Image 1 (tube, rainbow, N blue to C red):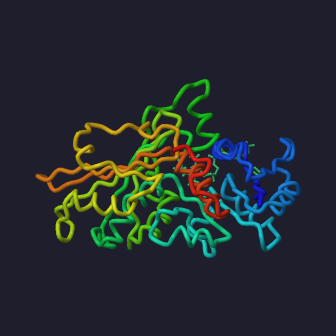
Image 2 (tube, rainbow, N blue to C red):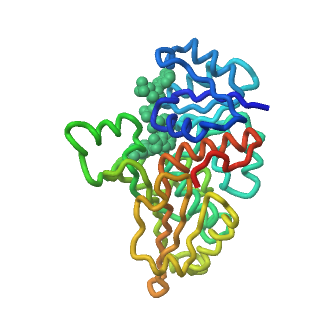
Image 3 (cartoon, helix red, strand yellow):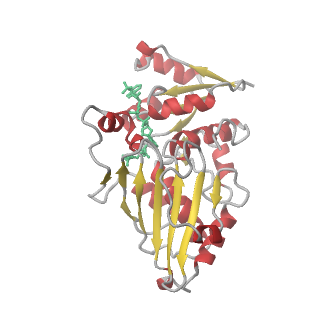
Length: 314
Ligand SMILES: NC(=O)C1=CN([C@@H]2O[C@H](COP(=O)(O)OP(=O)(O)OC[C@H]3O[C@@H](n4cnc5c(N)ncnc54)[C@H](OP(=O)(O)O)[C@@H]3O)[C@@H](O)[C@H]2O)C=CC1
Ligand SMILES: CC(=O)N[C@@H](CCC(=O)OP(=O)(O)O)C(=O)O
């Protein structure tokens, strides 16, 4: 049966990427609004209620408004915004979170697509918590760099405007209360908020998320191989998440922001030093790929009972 899909916010940065991934799929029929009606609440209400599945690519307030416009008990929702990620009644759309989670998503009506930063963070940390390698009360730090498309149309305009890029590298979130911290804490299972130190780089897309660990201070002083083993087991056979072999990581001297390019892949690395008992866990992804549009399309496939990677760039 053809699924009717409506992308609210379909001409924004994430919406356009999703449209590209859904083009030419005969099992889906896309409901599109004329340009002059795309913000008209009545036109949106009709489209939202006509769809089997809607994907919201809107600012948080507009996403909440869109959900309120749905007045039937049938339309399913994937929200790419931050509005519902830790809200009651919403499932968290990171299929790889833990065993059984994908099946939970398949049976959900309301799915919150993860933030780009939490996608890298949770991919690295959740398996370690589940394996008992990282105690739930461990003080975890996460840092990294994102392409400026992570800030949507306004940040793209800021970086590509007449004045040129405002900075080559710009740490932000300096109040230590970034909007992604609650979902990082909730879905990792950590008892305390991770210390999150993000930055924007002067590149359109791409993201590096890093969790440094003082392995020798952890209970049992696990090795980098122990950590790597837990990650490799968690993502064995995944067509989307890859864990670089330990010996290959050991031969690397750098990881580039562009590592996965414009794809929906998520690459994980463990860089360890036995002598110091330290490790740097790194996730490389595209903020617009697995960090946004790729995850939304993956979730759409899961909800619709379609092959999970259909339309993805892998
Ligand atoms: N960019 C990224 O890497 C990621 C983004 N997200 C989230 O996805 C959502 C979309 O982000 P992004 O695509 O970057 O943002 P953009 O600003 O690029 O796009 C948002 C779109 O929503 C439209 N819009 C705003 N208000 C309304 C409304 N009331 N009705 C209909 N359309 C409306 C905007 O219209 P107009 O064109 O007129 O401004 C714009 O086209 C946000 O919640 C963002 O936080 C999540 C993960 C990663
Ligand atoms: C570079 C940059 O500013 N990135 C955004 C995150 C983009 C994202 O994940 O989107 P959500 O806002 O939907 O969570 C930020 O840090 O707020």
